[in-house]
Image (cartoon, rainbow, N blue to C red; front, top):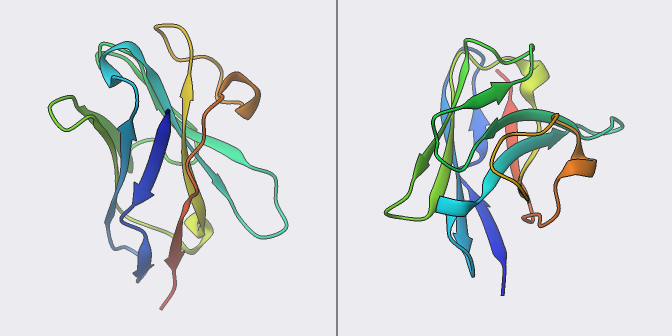
Length: 125
């Protein structure tokens, strides 16, 4: 059974850091593209980042470039999203999702299928 479980969310002050994790089970990340999305209250879900099967290519939304870093830990079958210099506008529920293929598609939820349950990130003083 394909399953994705996010963790690592929480409350952090502006300028702080968090590392989100997406633990996969039922399939290998060696053959999967994984993306991170977020949804703030009253807003549509937006793509944040994506990493390809070989973990040698990634994609970021303009709003997080230079602040967020996505990585794969293949030994633990887990994808991480390191978030630095957090801003209040980063507050949202963060989801990871799986996409077919080998390379990152456009960061739109329509290109991703299996989804985790989400983890809340709140950036506030």
